[in-house]
Length: 382
Length: 199
Image 1 (cartoon, helix red, strand yellow):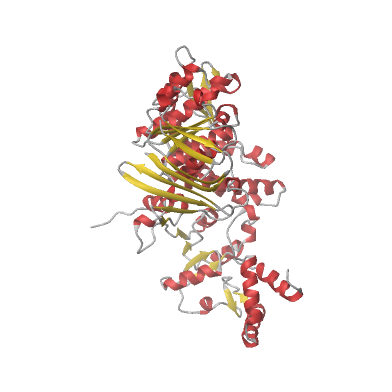
Image 2 (image 1 turned 45 degrees about the horizontal axis):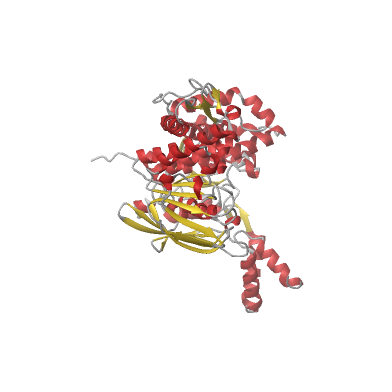
């Protein structure tokens, strides 16, 4: 799929921007602070209804404007779709597809698929486990929409259960009488989430290894993915072998259940839920050591990039061809890695790249060029 | 801000569920412009609710007098009991005209976040009703959300040893609708609870 036309209004620094795009690579060039990233952020918003830079929608709307609009003409197979999102901070967004409004905005998810790589993704390697869990869960939801329900139910159960444990500390007779009920919800939903994550990690692992080897070039350490859980798993945290068997939901429910009972005292003492996928982590292995703490700056970049490129490969396996967005990536990579990334990126149907210096982008990706300056974006014909 | 009485009215209206500041203002000015007779009827209705409406001593549904209309009705069967969260759920089920048993209104659902546990609901009263063995079947009709499910599971566990048959309302597709309009979660549930068609 590719974006044929992108239009934004009152989005971030942009009052308006109206831009025709083509398949293949497009490089957005301009000095810092001209709004290059804002344009690709808008593309990402169409795909996920969230920004990769901020968690609330308010900063997305130009200062002083009531709402922002992002509109794109998307070519999918041989059809063209017009997708429009009106961003209303504090109120429900409005989404229209081919000029007819969607009753539920989240139905737009999946129409535009993107894989976005930005400097913020360095946190996947260096940041807290939260970042990696979110990465896994977002990918899960975009592959199986049903998981959105499981994920939000799980979060709700967790809140309820934590509230119960907190009040139980202030002991009021049989405050824990309903804990058993929440345990059932927690373990059943937790097991579904856990199983889906484990399946995803096993499917993702070979793609990550391949992408890292390609980006980092010959002689680089081999990478692997592992998963640590609050329940005992076979080979906990160590790199998963391709095609390793994943325990079923029933087995995981029982394992969670047993662990919950084991840690009951601690949970009551501390007033929080200590068992479940909300405390798990995706472990990134670089050679013999974990990437976190051991990887150099360049290696961390390459690893984060490999994770995103693996998502792209995973979508491709399923017959999807997402738009690849590379935000400010090339300046951070050495010459060899730039060329390697270019080789991988040209295979995407459309690649949108932002760069402050055009020369940082390898020749293979020098397709169409958009000059971004003084609040306008102009397409320069190659 | 408006002067004295008007602002007081807006503030009071704004505290009602589902009424925001804008709606409160609109209702307040509507009342200001309305006939004295209309306003009089509204105040009378409010006062009557305060003075006359009680909760039924048996099922805790709203009632005028000791018992509600359903508990007073001798035609309603005594052996089936339907447990709901709120009196408005009784009205919803009554509209079906399918259910001929009686009700028990819990007054909410278990939700630790809001500080609601079983002791804050009319669970003890339900157990007392089940004691004498007249009720042989219990239908749990709490809301199909996490809190409702938790309440249902809690009750089921509590009641199972008493030898009462406990069932839960089915969840799935709305009747008369199109499959394409169902959201993923509902459709997923419907798949889980599918039934074999006997030819």
